[in-house]
Image (cartoon, rainbow, N blue to C red; front, side, top):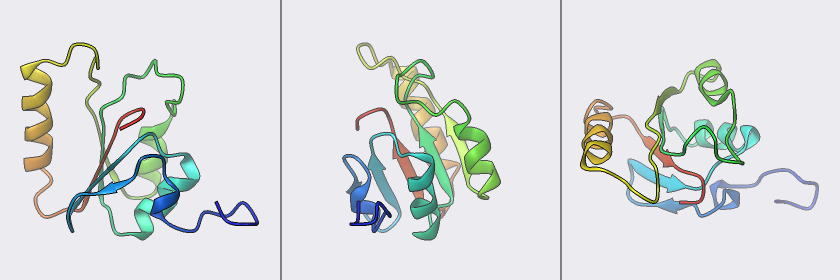
Length: 108
């Protein structure tokens, strides 16, 4: 965070990694950080974190929809991910066409 507590860049988001021009990943962004995600041109967010995670935003779907960002929630039990989890994730990526996609879980 900047000196005044204002977010300066995507690098302020926990465990942010830019994978390529279209795909990025991180831990759980805050509501304010999702504004940076939108400003960076991301139009789809895929959330892999369970709703019960302590840092989860209870209204993440509403926050993102109000920003005009498509929201896909695919909760994964991190201690036991399944082939079905992986296939649902691939389907979500493929359904995003040429969108810029931000993938996050609780910690990345």
